[in-house]
Length: 294
Image 1 (tube, rainbow, N blue to C red):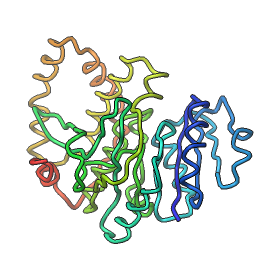
Image 2 (cartoon, rainbow, N blue to C red):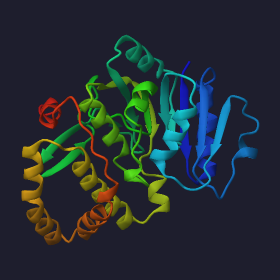
Image 3 (spheres, one colour):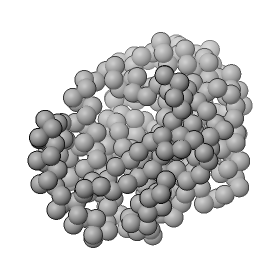
Image 4 (cartoon, rainbow, N blue to C red):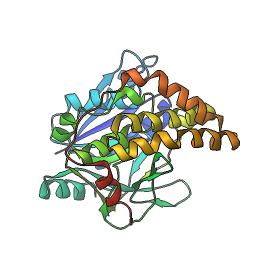
């Protein structure tokens, strides 16, 4: 048995529709719904479902903290994260259970995701370029090493999640939380893998894009990219490279009139006091090199 954490924010009709669909594949699992919209209760809507634990946040905490809250009350060692805009196709997530049971060094297993246009998002990777840390999806649909397990659909080890202190609220309200968590797992000596036999339907950004303006979303993405680097990159060479390239990147993005980059940098500086740096077993260059030929 596993615990399934489903965070939801507004768009109640879509959440309830997808929940009804997904429950047919979750009959034997513990299902925990975390309602991150304090303005609308879901108690009446979920009253008929006996196997659902409902948590209603007193204020809007964002994706990461909502997941942390749900995992703290989960009863099982293995936890599946399932966004409210994700549709299960079957019960093949059980294959990820087998993966995690056989290899105790695994932190998480990512799933293949079918997009709205029919494309399948597969494995992903990290790379460093011109002083910045980047992540790239759709690398391959074969099984193997995965840069990060997407927070919207993956199976993970709850004990390791708690050891890593879960998702960092530094990135609230969204973006980079799952990348940060998986990267910290890699640096701690754990592994993240991809299983292409598990396919879910996930229309990325349908919730975020509906409730937040595009410029705000891009600014947050750039802000969190900077925060990720300042928090996690400890290799001296990469740190020096980052700051040497910073003037170039400011000029480059300004030339492209990508003002959200500048706004994101300013917003990141304002949050710099929230960063909590840690020491890890694995060096940054070793992790980046793992994905060099992916």
